[in-house]
Amino acid sequence: MLDLRRLRLLRELARRGTIAAVAEALSYSPSAVSQQLAALEKETGVRLLEPAGRRVRLTAQADLLVTHTEVLLEEMERAEAALAQSLGENVGTLRVAAFQTAVLALVPNALTQLEHQHPGLRVEVTELEPEVALPSLMAGQFDVVLGEEYPGHPLPRPHATERQDLLTDELRLVTPARWSRRSLAGLASRPFVMEPVGTTARDWTTTVCRQAGFEPDVRYTSTDLQIHLRLVERGHAAALLPDLAGARNRPDVVVRRLPDRPERQIFATVRRGATGQPKIQAFTTALRSQDG
Image 1 (cartoon, rainbow, N blue to C red):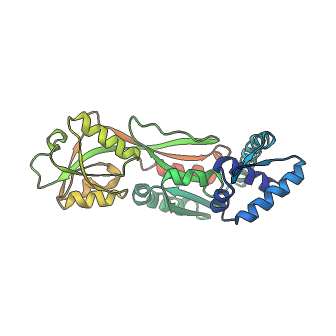
Image 2: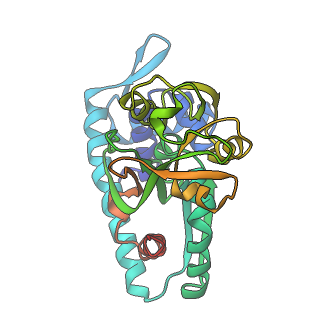
Image 3: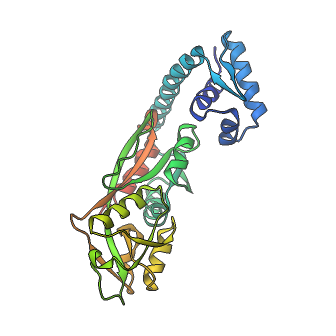
C-alpha cells in the first residue's frame, strides 16, 4: 500500500514546483523530501520525476497519482469530520490564519464565545494574509483561512477548497476632522494613504477615486489599516476604510458613506473535505454572529 505522507509530498511538489519550496513550506530539508519521493517511486515501481534543467518535473504517471491523492486526502478529511461529529463534543485544536483587521476586530470576540461554548477546543491564530496562508491551508498547516474580497475584484477560488461567506463590511471615506472639504470629489488635491500597489484593496480604492474624477495622490502606503487611521487622525491623509478598522469610534476623523454603499466580503476558506468538521463550524458560526 502506498504511503499517504509520501503521496502528500508529491501533491505539494505538483503545486509548488520545486523540492526546495516543498521543503520550506513543510519544514523539511530538501534531502528529506527527495528521499521520501525516491521511496515513493520504489513503492509504485514507476518513474515519478524526471530532470528539467536544475529542477525536476512530474511524469504523466505522477500527475495521475496526484489526481488520486487529492481524492484520498479529501476522503480522509471527511472521515475525520464524521468521527469528530460522532463524539458529540468539540475538542482538539483549530488552526486559523487571518488578515490583520479580522484578528483585531472579529477573532477576539469569537474566541470568547468559543471559550464559553466549547471549553475543550484549543484555537491557534496566526496573522497572515490569505495569499500567503492558502498554500499552507492546502498543505494541512491551517484549518481555516480568513480572507477579504473587494467590490468588483473577485478572487480566484483554489482547487479543492470551499469558501464560506461570513459577513459584509461597509467601506467608507475617512477624512481628518479639521479638513473643510470632505466629499470624495473635493479631495483631488489632498494626500491619500492606501495599501500597496498590486493588492485588491489598492486597485479598488484607486478605481473609486478615478470614478470621482481624479487620480489620487498616494503619499503613504501600508498594509496596516491602523496606520491608515492614525495618519487620518493626525491630519496627514484621507483614506477609504472598512468599518472593522474602527474609524467611526475616533473623534478626530469624519466618516462618510460612499455612493452605493460598497462593502467588502469577509469569508473563510477551508479544505473541501473538512467542511463538516464541528470545530470549523463552531468557529465560523461565532464569526457570523458578529455581523451587524
